[in-house]
Image (cartoon, rainbow, N blue to C red; front, side, top):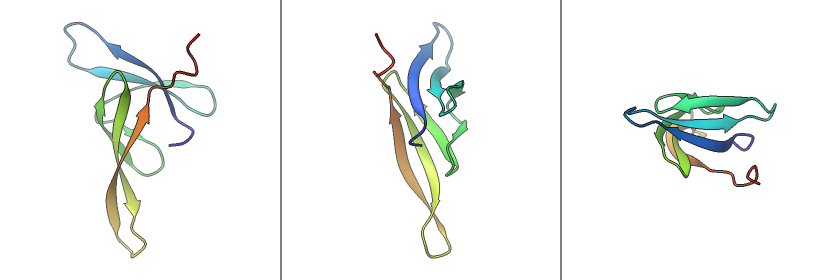
Length: 81
């Protein structure tokens, strides 16, 4: 998740889908929506707002099982001028 940067948010009038714009380490930008998967830990996008993307990751618990962990990616202000 450290290499993913939220650089934008798209909400169209009369469209129920909120979109996030994610920039990856290679510089490529991807448009994502609720329900998409993100990152190496099977992170499912559970909410997108104008300020952040909330994600639920599935990570190994060290005992042969798995557990859920909440994560988020905040909107980056670094690309603004």
